[in-house]
Image 1 (tube, rainbow over the protein chains, first blue to last red):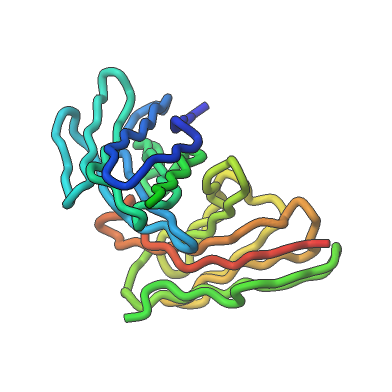
Image 2 (image 1 turned 180 degrees about the vertical axis):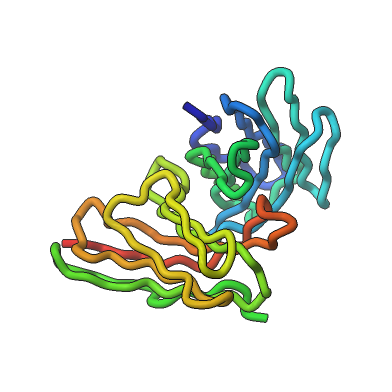
Length: 112
Length: 113
């Protein structure tokens, strides 16, 4: 059975800290891995990773995929209170390009 | 562009009642999806529609029906609501060429008593 596991489940840090969120997966016929940020409402797209070892970067956020070890990390540097959210990882397997299998998410709280 | 819109935002039902959740997108996307999100379980796919006129079951389709009314609209119907269907429901859409990158609506919080 395809499975996506995120850790930690929750994390509390102070502004300025750097955080690393983890996503591991057991998926047959892996196609891609996506990161979403969910604040109060809709998840919003952050990154999509398909190739191992290539870092995707957007401002203070970056992510990398390791297809050999079956995991991805999302780094946030110099955290701000606005980074407080649930971060969701989802994996797409080749069997169905339309189906995202989500992890349960990491709740990040950034304190001032 | 409004993106993906959903109505209603909140709904309370009694067990056995029926209702339809509405979703519309104005991005000219071909594919649309319905998910539910429960605490500690991430999002789970209920149904999806690859294109107008087609629908397919996802991971948790039991107790639900869908209609792809046209390219813009995709509705989710609960025929006889059960407390286990208490959840937050999200609609999403994506382009045909890039079905993995999905755009989500604001969600409907449904409580079944």
